[in-house]
Image 1 (cartoon, rainbow, N blue to C red):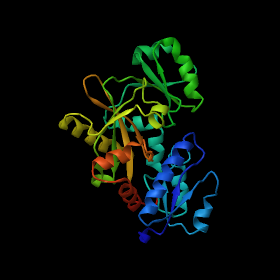
Image 2: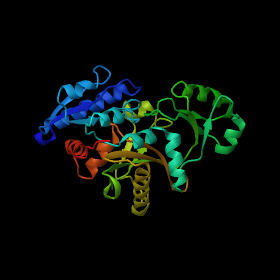
Image 3: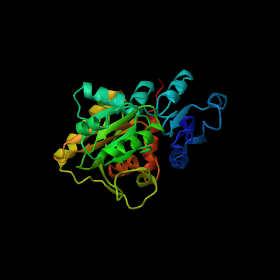
Length: 307
């Protein structure tokens, strides 16, 4: 596997998702090294990016999550350094990280998304509740891993939920709750050749799929195969591909869905640097599709590009 050259596995960083990124990066690093790749860990919170060139790195596997790693900033820097990197480029990364602007793109193309509202200090709580119903979810628009998300069950809870989300981001959204279940679809590839892996149904034991349920609890259930009828899963995977292509994603990403009570899927968000921990969903879907973890890492690395 020396044809990859010297590979930096970029992990850690300074976002709120640093602990998860350290776990993801360690797993990717071990997998690549097990296949003979000359891979090394690189934490941009501890070392300048210029060291990538000084030390002769030839590719970068991005295992950073959240701001500074998944939002287009790092992708822009690596593009200027002419270093190939995994995953989406600047624009797709920035769009996917911003839940509001990704919704606007999908809306413009007629793709289904949950009803939502942008909140601010002067919001009319009664109007928001009238529009979206209860319960609803309040979330920072540019965070991941369910950080800052609050489930609101009464209109009186809305100001406090907004304040909590606003601690993490100046852009805050409220979304209609969907009761038909939560699903996710991992995509590999680019353009018309992109492939949707089997869907996973997520069944948290907690009230919703929060940070603890994602990374620390052992009572969250993941169903893959998803249990959906074949034609319904096929529709969801097709919608995932359409959402992926609409944002201009490449390499790989994970598209999250909510279903309504009638079983209709709605695009929720795109993750352009999905988790690669023991609890993560992209490796789970790949395994069901016949792709072991180390093979998945190699496949992603093979799709490196610049810019």
